[in-house]
Length: 243
Image (cartoon, rainbow, N blue to C red):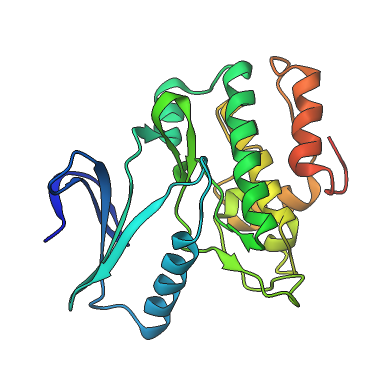
């Protein structure tokens, strides 16, 4: 580690480990993601390189910024700005958020998605676990492992990516989809932030397909009619059946 001091372990999973770090000869705190190359297929390594390339060019206040990346014989290291926490952890601790806070979070996520989609990039894995908390209440969308950059002649995508609870009807039915699937997932996230559970939930993947494609959204009385309409037009307008 010629350029960074590795400090505390802050997360780990099948992808590898994430550490809090600091740039040497400076005070900048960063996040260091160590991704092992051993045991990964050529396809997985190519996908990792695509993810890095997509992140390298992103510049938006609500998207986690990649600062650096490099390879060793055994691993790929991705350096990003350091976030203070995770939206998912707040949901775990508090159950749900106030409407005022949800409005603020939603506006920032809409801004991030508008930026991505205007650059012909689909995130394809929108969920609370991929939303970080920056300084001053800022929201940072992260994890572009499933992201897809569309060519100028590509209008829809067919490969199935994402997390089932947040998948749009097109995805669960294995049909072509576009940027609106990200908006669908955003609607699911906002609902979960308000209510504390996803709008379409079951332990059976077969039942989940039926629920997502056929069941109307059930709103608790505690959610104001105004916010229901806003969420509908933000993420679910194109879904048959409406609110």
